[in-house]
Length: 237
Image 1 (cartoon, one colour):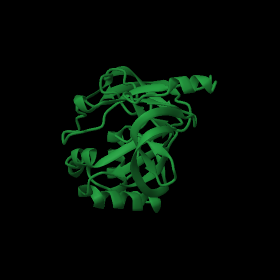
Image 2 (cartoon, rainbow, N blue to C red):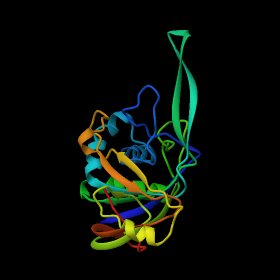
Image 3 (cartoon, one colour):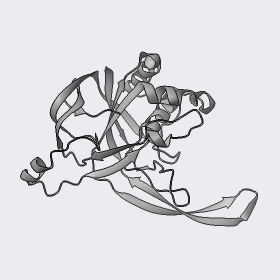
Image 4 (tube, helix red, strand yellow):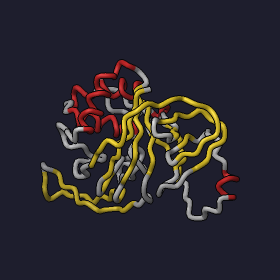
C-alpha cells in the first residue's frame, strides 16, 4: 500500500473522549478521526463538505501512531459565559496533553480516496495548509511535516515496534522482563476509528490498543503487521 510517515506535534492537544462531556478528558494520542479532520483542514475542505468524507476516509485509510515522548496531562479551568446572559457563568475543567509529539503512519487501503491522499501528502511535503491544522481544539495548533513517503508491505511473524499494537496482539511480556527495562511504561487506550456523516464516532468501531512511549519498543509474537520502506513495523487500523 502507498503510505507515509508524518510527524505531528504541538504545545497542547485535546482529543476529547466523548463519554466525558462535563469535564472532558483527552485520549493519549491523536485518533484516526482527528487525523481525518486534520486532512480536511490542510486541504481546505469546508465542514459541510467534509461530512461525507469522514466515513469514506475512515474506511479507505489505515493509520498507526508512535508516541515519541512521555504522555503528560494537565487539567485547566475555564469560566464559560452565555452570549445571551454574560452574568450567567459556569466553571469547567478540561484535560490537555502537554507537548504532544507523534509519528503517524498513514496508508491508502482503497483507491477511492487516492486523490485526497495524494493531495494531503503533497501539501504537507510542501509545508502548505489551507486552514490551520489543529490538535483537537482551535487553540491547539499543530506542526506537521512529512518524514517519508513509501510503501507498507503486509507480513506475518514476530516483530518489534515503537508504535501501538491492538489488544489482541500477543505482546512478548517475558522478553520485556528479560531485557530489564524497568522504565518502560505501556499505555492502554480505546480509540475511535470510524466517524459517520453526522460527525458521530460509532461505538462498535472503537479499538483497544497498547502503546509504548519515549522511543521504547515492544516485541510481539507472531502476528500480522506492516513493514514500511524504512524497515519500521506497524499495526495499522
